[in-house]
Length: 89
Image 1 (tube, rainbow, N blue to C red):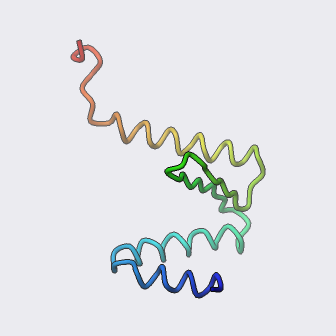
Image 2 (cartoon, rainbow, N blue to C red):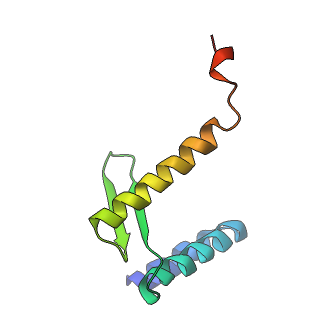
């Protein structure tokens, strides 16, 4: 089976909400290949512990900056509703 056929099957298996999300993801990733500014780092983590990381339109230093930005965003998202540390004891 070709990659195009596999992709078509996987997209057909998605519900409408997942297809819309996937479309948005692909459009934004494609900008990394067709525009000068956007860059991305995508890491796919598999249950067997193997990870794959793909970089788009960036070198190792840019990838590090993107990853740090992602980490800061996630830390903020996780802690934004947490009580003040004074109330945690």
